[in-house]
Length: 243
Image 1 (cartoon, helix red, strand yellow):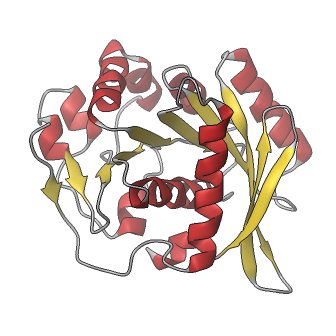
Image 2 (cartoon, one colour; image 1 turned 45 degrees about the horizontal axis):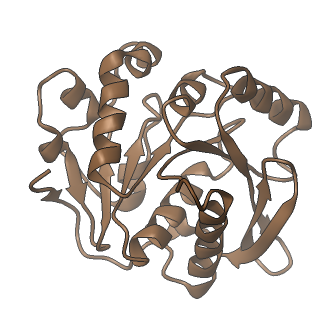
Image 3 (cartoon, helix red, strand yellow; image 1 turned 135 degrees about the horizontal axis):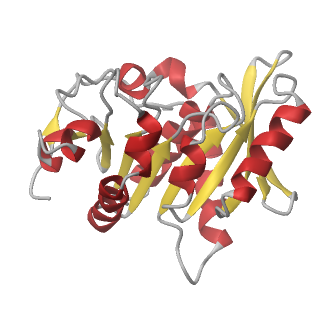
């Protein structure tokens, strides 16, 4: 695409604290190490239930990728509960639905952010039949176009345990990261969501634990590979609160 619109005001970069940056960089490194011969470029971020911090993980990971010098597009595909534009303090005039229906050009819908190399594609509110939209051939084609225009594309999706949207998107991308919040998510909810992703035959990259330690008042990311092995955990403040 030849150009991108820039919206939003200059602000403190998301996740500017060193703890957030280190945690997100560790997650980014783990993803790259998973498939060195065939780089993972498109990633869906999901969870089993709401309020597990998947959007925080998506934005923090995107910033880590952008600061490494790679172009990255964050796509809000949670069409029932869009939130990323609010977190990022951006006000795009159009989103992916307008592009899919031919009402807007992709170059007008994708907006730049105050962070170099980081771009954003919103979704409109009150979209009719989101699952049908995501299942359409036009959306699959849009994913291909996005992958060809950016070095990384991150999709923030709805929780798996609530809707099938994440599983649908998971079949279109290189891999899925499953976000869990210890002491919040019930085991049966995680098991059900993980089973749903498995039935869709998506490539599950691993699970990322996102939680807050009450003693130190810090958040931590702990990354687990698809086979259940804990890779590493690093402290991280809640990035969403800084956006």
